[in-house]
Image (cartoon, rainbow over all chains, first blue to last red; front, top):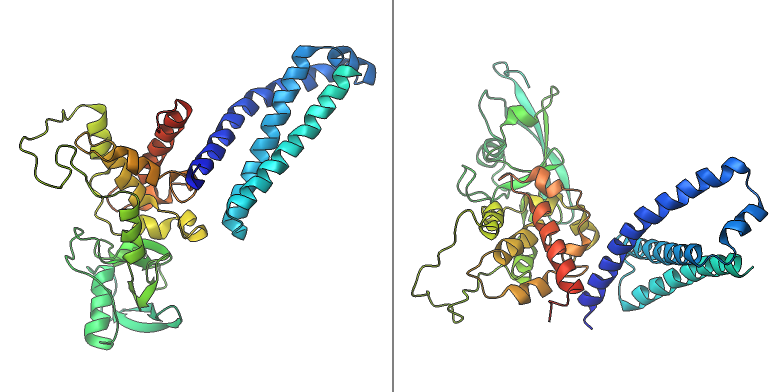
Amino acid sequence: MSAARGQVHLWIVQRVTAMLLAVAVTVHLVTILLAVRGGLSAAELLGRLQGNAAWLCFYAVFALAAGLHGAIGLRNIAGESLGWRGRGFDLAWLGIGLLTALFGIRAAWGLYAA
Amino acid sequence: MPTPERGATLEVSIWRGGAEGAMRTYQVPARENQTVLDIVTYIQRELDPSLAYRFACRVGMCGSCAMTVNGRARWTCRTHASRVVGPDGKLELRPLANLPVIRDLATDMAPFFDKWAKAGGRFQPKDAKDGAVPEEFAVVPPTSKQRREADAGIECIGCGVCYASCDVVAWNPDYLGPAALNRAWTLVNDVRDGARAERMEAVAGDAGCHSCHSTQSCTERCPKQLDPSASIAGLKRKLFWDTLLGRRG
């Protein structure tokens, strides 16, 4: 795959994750507003998330989108302001994005399987 | 600036030198009707014949007299002094940004035109790959969507104002820039052209349309009121769907 093609793929991933985040962040904020009405407690969180595959899916997609979107954005900033360009940097940013996403997914799994 | 009094002068500071150099100040008579190019010409003819600058038509057709006027890229022939000289009577002229300076106000436009070529800016007739004139005229309905897209960008005369105004060019020297990408989009929409696939590959990626931040300085400053930013958005949109739908080959 040519370097330019890989760059286009990163661009597309960032746009698509932006679309997902627009929905996911809205759901997230509405959930926060509703959840705190009855007082925020660990029991309530677990009641909602434990064993609930729909919430697990939602947070897994949310974390993946956030991790990739953020890392690709940082890649662009680093390229323009620090001159960090090239395949090595791209792979490193992709790794950072996936790692960040993994932390989020692990947390979601922890609540699901708790 | 109000109508200048008789005998009033303008304080014009001009970049002298190449990449290294300094500003030099000249006193130029203020006239009721004078363009910035008139001022530069006055300095070169009456005060300092060693001043280097570039112009040709003087009427906004050739695009060769663009300079940085008070920090902003403009055609000097179409910029009336009264629009840019402040109440203090001061004017600052520098060569176009983002291009190597040859001397004084003259920049080397080679990188600009090299990128134009790199973006596939040359029309490649579909019916005559060897560059021969096709036997029949192509019929392109003026109201068709592609014709309207091509018409929107076709009037570019390659003055480099957008290129000098683009932050992304300053950050990434490989970036093709607004003019070259606008040209590419014009040809992508030209139904007579036969090199669309190669051109789309040439404008993809970090050196191409995908680095554009859509801040639209190019559109804001284009003396022809073209919209390179919209052309770049068109390229991005097309590459997005072509990639997702596997149409790029």
